[in-house]
Amino acid sequence: MWLMLAFTSAALLGFYDVFKKKALRDNAVLPVLFLNTLFSSIIFLPFILIGVFSPDTLGGTIFDVPQAGWEVHKYVLLKSFIVLSSWIFGYFGMKHLPITIVGPINATRPVMVLIGAMLIFGERLNLYQWIGVLLAIGSFFLLSRSGKKEGIDFSHNKWIFFIVLAAIMGAISGLYDKYLMKHLPPMLVQSWYNVYQVFIMGPIIALLWWPKRKTTTPFRWEWSIILISIFLSAADFAYFYALSYEDSMISIVSMVRRSSVIVSFTFGAMLFHEKNLRSKAIDLALILIGMFFLYLGTR
Image 1 (cartoon, rainbow, N blue to C red):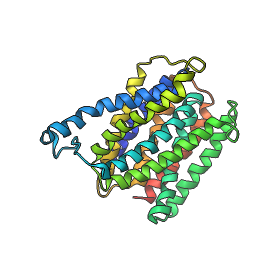
Image 2 (cartoon, rainbow, N blue to C red):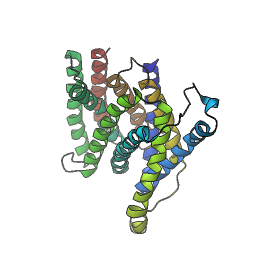
Image 3 (tube, one colour):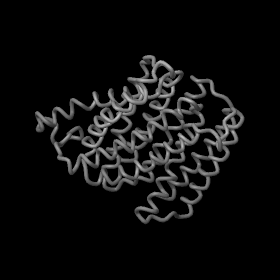
Image 4 (cartoon, helix red, strand yellow):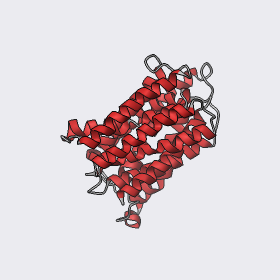
């Protein structure tokens, strides 16, 4: 069941990436991110209020948001900072890079999760896992070759650096999620970390964007901003619920979620008419083969 939830999350995450790319085209990044956190919070606010004023209504269901004190919320707040750091880097990178490059770079995240699992939890890679890791790393270097054809130098392009940082922070978040799901209800974490992000983004908007809004890329409303929040919330719900299963494995869940690159790559070709698709498709195929070997090695 948890594996099916991971695949569901992956499909939803692919559409989230597509709508994020659409919303960010020629648009101000920070307001889009702020509205994303705001709408996501609005989605979960009713569940928080029900948990406060009528706890028996959803008690015992997967939508229950139990009340908790600071000893619990401090861990959720840390989760908010980690995710928001990943999003800020990722949103800026997504705005300035083709989605057919961003998607495959993000697809290397499971490799980082596996390495983190080795260092933190003492896991060791078997032969299949090593093959998967090497294929994923090799595909990254091949992808840099494709990027140069579009004038994107991986070693000197700061937006590539931003996407890589976003992937690293995302991997840290994934490892932390597995820890949280062992101790906390999924809905408590997802609902409150969205709320905390709104309060974190508020000062960022006020200090970094608002004073310079007339001299930087202007903000314009896009209906895809709402779709970002809807698909992300649904993807994360399936993801957290998958990790709540006792026998779930973060290495496999993380790997499966990165298969969202298939959706983002397809729509990058169809909607955004991006270039060098043939060479990128080869790089993508290597990543997916690497994912398959990771799956074989972690069954």
